[in-house]
Length: 124
Image 1: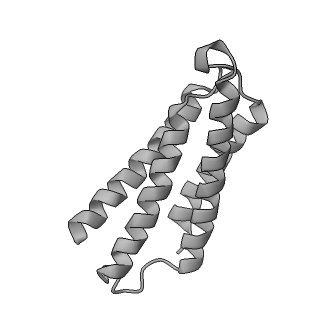
Image 2 (image 1 turned 90 degrees about the vertical axis):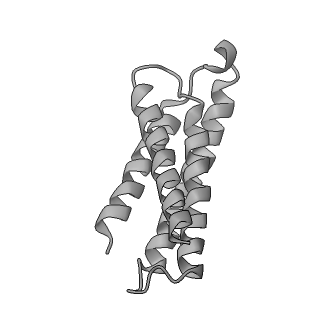
Image 3 (image 1 turned 60 degrees about the vertical axis):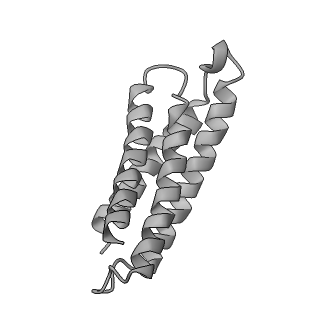
């Protein structure tokens, strides 16, 4: 079970890396990489599976992270995934799927991703 938990942790990290990397790579352009949505969806699903696996197998014998932290991270991650989906649809309307995305939408994805990372690191 611990191996499966570690697989979900790795997928979770890869998902957030895709979101943050896609955002950073598209800062100067008007669009947002379509992979940002897929990275956010991967991170959300892997995070839920990771917590479920850890709870089922009692991998967090020391109590693990607080469920309030997990809840806050889940809400932020769902908001990021929804915003990334909206950005993907907005960008699909022009230039063969790579059209412009509203700057507020794009930058809120980047900002919320950083907030989610900071919550993960600094909330004990």
